[in-house]
Image (cartoon, rainbow over all chains, first blue to last red):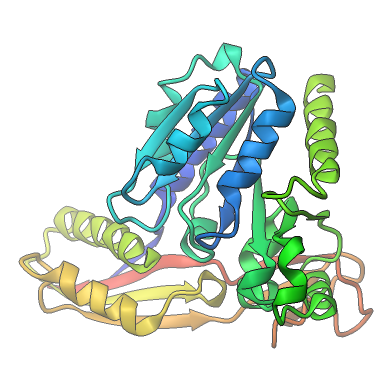
Length: 219
Length: 113
């Protein structure tokens, strides 16, 4: 006998993500989910961003790490509340783990919450965390073909950071090819070209973030 | 490896339905999979076979129906199948598109007795 089911897998993740979205909205907190390959520069970008915003901005960080607390320790010195989620080998964060982490924060003291997802371009883009927006971070040393290979992330992303621009001349990264692929996948997404380790090209990213926060205040 | 998380959730649904319908065993699971989900079929089947052991679905076969990615142009309303990641309307060349199919992860039906 055949039984019709028609049920969506990952519905539970989606339901929890919607609850998180509502909770954050109620508390006027914006949450950005940073997604990249391992080593693209998410932590360094966050370090620069924390330094720029300063300890009174109301920033919180949820740090997704496969096994260690190394990234969380790097970010601790900036004085923001950080909650570490070790996925014990899992390749992505899900809304259930974010929901648990949110209980560790006093949301009333926060305005801006960064989630540093596990380094991976595929899995994290399929799990809604209840974020305000996804941010895709890529680097020149990874090759120029990421937007076309991982279209879901680059279509969903509200901003793209192309990092390690200082290494461009040492790689075979084809800049024009990257731009053309990115625009084919997502014609309008803002792109910020940065070198996080050198602190270069970050003004646009900071400005964009601050504009986003202003929009939040005006809502 | 989001395949494992998807399979785990798939089994939760399958076993829940099997229990409600008082099935003694599940023979087949019909699953719809949107191509934008970037699921690797072999990995997915491997995860399915690993998860089914010692359950009502221990001998179940997985049948996957792949759904192509379909886009709809917001300017002219044309609906088309996405090929070669070419996110452009074939009629008006517009690039403001909505994805209308391709993200499905649906347990369509199960067979059992």
